[in-house]
Each structure stands twice: as C-alpha cells, then as structure tokens.
Length: 218
Image 1 (cartoon, rainbow, N blue to C red):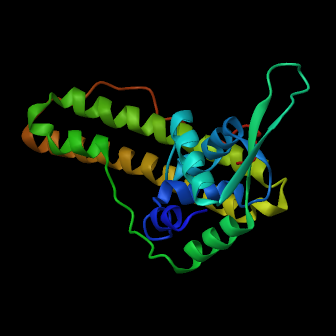
Image 2: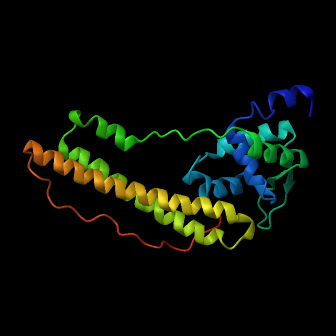
Image 3: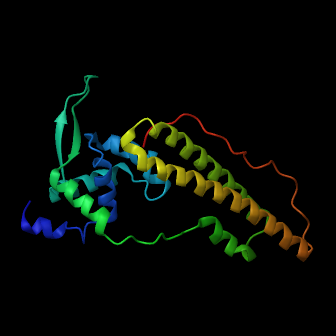
C-alpha cells in the first residue's frame, strides 16, 4: 500500500461502513461478496446497516486498496464460473482491532418513520394514523421473530458469541417497538375519546409473541 493510499484510508477517514465489512471478515473466514451480504442480513441489519450488493463490493474495493483485505478467485463445485473470495489481512486485523478499541462511539440517530407520520397527525384521518401504527406493530413483531431465529442459529458457532448478544438486543428492541406501537394506539383512542371522535372499529389483535423458527448464523 502506498503512503497516499494509506492517508486516504486511515482510521480517521475510513467510513464506518468499511469497518463493518472488515468486521465481518475479522471472524477469520474467507467470504465472497454474496456471503458477506448474507452475513450482514443475519446480524448487522438489526442494529446498523443492511447493505446492497453494490455497497458490499464498493467497500471491499476500498479495503483492498487500503491493504486491509485480499482476494483470490476460486473454482466452484457446481461447475459455474469462478468466484472471488476475500480474507482480512494481518494489517486489516490490526486496524479493525484498533478502531474497535479506540475510535469514538457515535450515539445512535433515530429516524422513526411512523412517529414522523404521527407527528403530522393533524393532517391525517384518524384511521390513517391507526393503520400506520398497526403496520409498524406487525413489522416490529416480524423483525423480533427473525432476530430470535437468527440468534438460535448463531449459537452454533462459538466465535459468534458477541453477535448473538446483539441479536438478543434486537429481539428486545423490536419487542419494545411492538409494545410502544400498542401503547400509542391506546393514546390515540384516548385522545379521540376526549375530542368526541367515534371509536375505531374492532381490528384483528396484534401478532402474539413467538419463539421464531430455527435460523442461520449471522
């Protein structure tokens, strides 16, 4: 790696998304871009980032340029065209370890679409506001179940102990989002009652908590 490339990709300027991809490689396995996309969908998407394939490959190119990752072509057993796989380098492992230990931790930034709509409730019909919250309730329960399933799969690998803890966090987070949506529905009903608005018709109950299906490791 040249001094110029090092300057462009040092720990201060490399974006957090690059560190996330390098972090996926830090578990020691040789992975294709497709593998990295699957692994990110099994873990990172619950709390940080759900990258597209183009984003994955863009970050891999950046990491190779920095000397933090290397790649090679390997033949596939199916007889299809060869695929490129990536592995973290010693320099990359040193860099991501230093970043994880020393870089400032950014506070989470919440961008909550359903709450933005509720904030604009004076522009909506009451039933529209309820529908937004019911849909969010269903989404949160779906994500909670997925986190449970993926955590079950991740437990098979001892090296994924800490990613499994983040999946447990995701389970609790989405359970909280589901329950907060239910509480907001009650708040809307109370507000409408105080204003003399007719109550909403009975709707199907929210999805009940479930253990989820067996999943895969992140």
